[in-house]
View 1 (cartoon, one colour):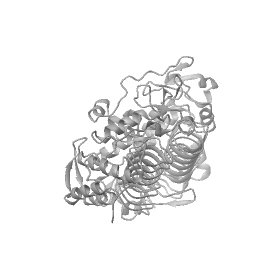
View 2 (spheres, helix red, strand yellow):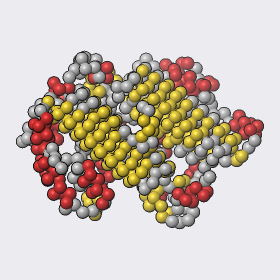
View 3 (spheres, helix red, strand yellow):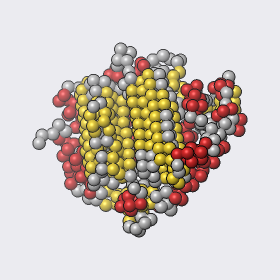
View 4 (cartoon, one colour):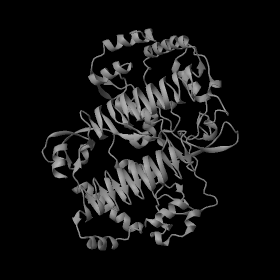
Length: 586
């Protein structure tokens, strides 16, 4: 079969032909990892060289390019000098921004004007970084689809009246939600699907009128649930199926249940915190934990898998109906947060898409390598924030373009000949296929999903080359009444509208934050005390409650058999293998 990049393909074949499985030393963290036969098979299929970085470092580099931890700055818009707009980058960032209205307006600017010729005497990576520092980026990374009155959202599409959310779609009136789809009138969500009138929901779907719910499905009008299915009107319960009126896992009559619940005033922070501590202790000591959560996923390893096939070390991959098409996942290695993904390795927040490697935020893409935030693209490599593009290499901000390199137009034959030279040189330099190094991320490490999933301190981040904000400016509270956590009323019944003019000092971080009018109305309607913890700290706490994107070898607490588990054995929890779990929890 003919090839458009014959020199690169010949050189790559030589490398892959002599590659064997076995231990390797990660070139980033220097830790040891195993290069497996399955990895080599996928490298051959996707036409990339053998992996030189460990799976954790590969994921870390991608996730460090996703700043959706509810932290925003003010930065000058390059369209209007002197005008500072909400941005995920601060003034110290070397990258330029346009406010989103201008960035998406083709009449305002043309990314091709920032193009430059490829210099074969210099490493391509350096030329790409120079382009990325010249081309303006979105102030807030956001898809173009129908975002109404939802300014402070990122990675978002089809929203209305949402506030401080990241990677959210098809939702209305949601605040502080991350990795959310089809939600309405809810607050403080993480990895939630079809949620309404709910608060503090993690890793759950089809939840209505409930609070403090994790690993649950089809539940309503309940508080404090863990691993429950098809339950309603339950309080403080774990491992329940098809139940009503259960209180701390005790079956009650309707009258008895309602009497018990009325005695607990969850409108008071002190009472709510006490109940939460009690519930957390119950989960730790009494719940039967499923080693991994998979459903209809043959020949697959990972966690939180639904309708997957032939997936390896894949996490949070679900089937979903999207624009009248039903997408599933199959033939994936080392993926996270996927839907509709096929034949891919090292992809995150990806789908629908196929035949791709080392991609973050790919929507409706095919044959993409080492890229970020692409929409409807085919055979695009090392490109960032491009839409409706075909056959582009090392580009940024392009729309509806073909045969471009470094934002410069080429003829078809010249394009492929130049790409052949670039990829062959990158292969010799051992950089082809690898994601942008941490030091070139658009964002500070501590503002990104990498910090939530793979946390580092300042010194550890520096050793890996990650950027860190050394001089973050304190938030200006002038004009606001400053309230210490202890000055915020314990009961929502005692909170007046004056709270809307206050800056609350977070009890954990010392950072100020505000309460919005819509948020206060939600708290009052659902008898929830005003929080004294900053929204970002609350989000990071939800991330800590989630299982990491990692598997350990564990022993089933029931039968003693070895089983892969997303629970760290050092925690000494009661983890059951799949068979024992279903026998115990039904």
